[in-house]
Length: 348
Image (tube, rainbow, N blue to C red; front, side, top):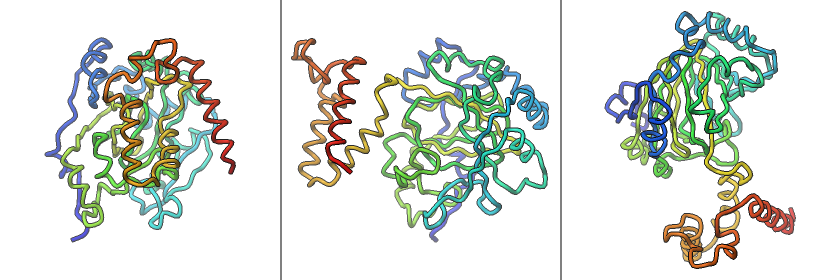
């Protein structure tokens, strides 16, 4: 049988993400952030006014948000009945199974509360609150995240399913209303997740091609191994989850009005650029090489970039280490200009 059901009940035996109750900033740094592992932070934002409104009713929360809306246009994904809330590619991967509409938050909230539209999938994702709900962050603060440079971004929709994907930044995601299930996979499971295109994605990051609600194990046999390493977290209003950068996570949202706030932050200097740019350049310059030469380049990358042998410049005077040493804004600027000139010289 090609298809096998992977229902929420089937995940009850999966390992649970470790959980912390009412964690403070020092405990977060010591017990959570210092380990490269996801963590559930129970009731981290349970005292938020937005969460209290959600506990009263979906309409109370909608009214709370509408009262703070400055009517800035927003983008929403709209899927028709039959997609089952799974925002993804069309079967032939010649497009996506949803449309994108520019609208107002008030329209999104009205549609989500309208019983006549309950069979439609509506999803407004990753919108900075400062652009549309400027009063939200001061009223609902999360200092653990903002102290690290995280900016609150809001996600609003009804029930939805998002395929396993990763973020380049560390992340705290906070459930305001509805419930959410996160199914997480360590970064080393990438070969077992059957990742789709990295240059034409559903919402910015590469995603697994596996439908977790109906896994085709004949097409994706290695996904069984990924499931052996899966972690599961179920979150209710007020709960949050910390997801380290590059951990794969699928997200299942439930409820007619599901609201989540998330905060991303990065360890890298803001002018350093994305490692995805380096990956793209490596695909361009190295992926086609013969096996022995790719292995030789891997040795160089392991030595200089991943520092498997320690500091590769320890034997060089600090003043002469150049880009192999600790980078500075000046060094990063010089390197960017060099790369730009080099790429421009290739033409095309």
